[in-house]
Length: 114
Length: 116
Image (cartoon, rainbow over all chains, first blue to last red; front, side):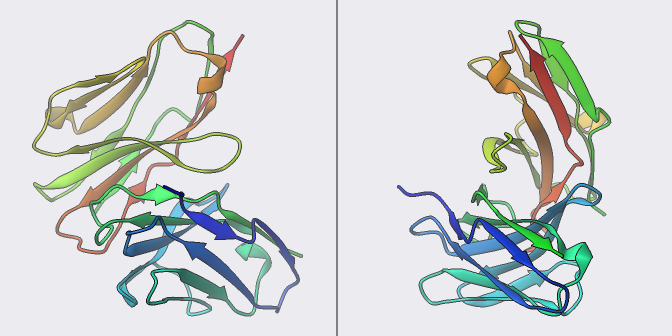
């Protein structure tokens, strides 16, 4: 079974731009979660989607948004990029709602904002 | 509120030594789940173990073992006879059943370096 895939793997943007990251979950998994990982803040939960609905959102500004499609693929969007948005963005999928199920992570998208 | 503490920021050991990574958690729920993940230099988080709060039995998987003690709110991870390939950042995580959709809270991680 293929694992979680994320595209692109690396991205360089400038301040003020917007970016869209994509995540394809493991086949059959309906829950997709997004995390931001930075050296200073560690791994922080962004949001979780299940059956195309956002179930919960972490403590991030509204510039961070996401969506999930009927095939469970998910995208996250960051608008008006700031230098502090430079991070590794990890996507994880699980069978159910993600709260307690094991989450399987993708390789991440490394975003650099210049 | 949920909280996970990994007091050891970095650990260095020589190959074949045993090493224990500590994890202490805080939760108000009686039903919760604990996890360990490994993050090698490639960046992908690799799942190691999931344990629910009602199962305090220790677990062994090859060179890996886990010691879960509810009395001290700890879920420690031991690598026996460490190898260079064990070098990675290890994260402990907590998920509460009642925080439906809350998802994981990760500890800050412990960077393990195994020297040849």
